[in-house]
Length: 128
Image (cartoon, rainbow, N blue to C red; front, side, top):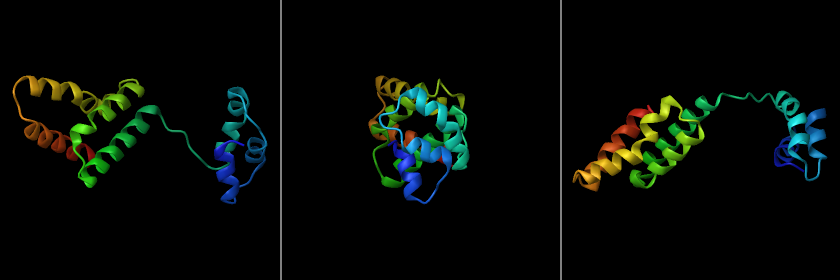
């Protein structure tokens, strides 16, 4: 049973399409693709554009990094990866290129502490 159907049934959400998805064992892509739009409609789920999803995920990652006190330099590849997977979404390009920016800053002799503070500032501006 696909996880989304199981979670929906456990939460008390029911409908013909949810039950149809729930009875599928080892469903193929095509079986899920056929029923998924109806499941989403029954569960009142909306599909958002990839760019908007990428911005939301990037904002969440930025807030999590800032709130956790993690080293932001350890997360710059997360933004790079998200930027690529979102087909180079313009709204997160400044975060997506941080890896390159850090490389250039290091090659120019800037300290990791200076770079870290600059990255934090960029994340704070983005997370607003």
